[in-house]
Length: 297
Image 1 (tube, helix red, strand yellow):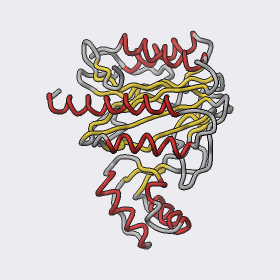
Image 2 (image 1 turned 180 degrees about the vertical axis):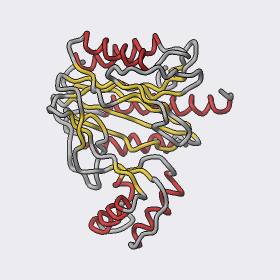
Image 3 (image 1 turned 120 degrees about the vertical axis):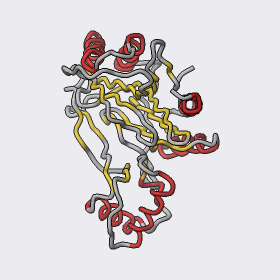
């Protein structure tokens, strides 16, 4: 990997570490989910970096893709199992990291299982390891704790301005001889549950991503496309970031038009199929003989 690119990954990872520290300090019962998201995103911008995706603050059986809406009044409650998923980019080079907290408790067995599986992954990953080998490892570690991995979620490669690259490493074992290459960057995340071990799409959708330009009818739709091209490129963005585009009704209609035309892709919240609680742990890994974990010190 070129030195300049490595330095950008390391800088993004360092800001992720700082953002995690802020989140751990601030997260408590009674805090508005919106307030925490905005504090984390402000820190990222204040450090001169970009937000790689809206801060995900998914609670209990919601595994991923929940970010607060405009004027969201949801608050964290004692006993909530909270996943904090943070993305930072420097010129498109991404740090992607997540941790889980059980509010009111020092830890939780689901969190420990997730952390252990990721730690064993990091200890084992090397250039030439296969997706099949690594997915089997994650599956076996999680099930050894008495829980299920979320089998239709996966770790993923990370590329410039692409949070999810072409490689996936599922949490559940699959047969695959695809090799993981030297200097490949992975956002490796492990999701654990005492539920069925599958997620399904839920609502409302609060995260979107640009796919391709399309002709649109509404002025608000055109404004959104211009804004995405300038600021977010191919990275996900939050509906709440567009509150200045128009009234809530007009914004809803514009996003719906853009999705229907194929200009945007939706990322609806992902809920565990049997409503089991979910924990998540993630780090960004540069695959080498001695892997570089950019998002932790």
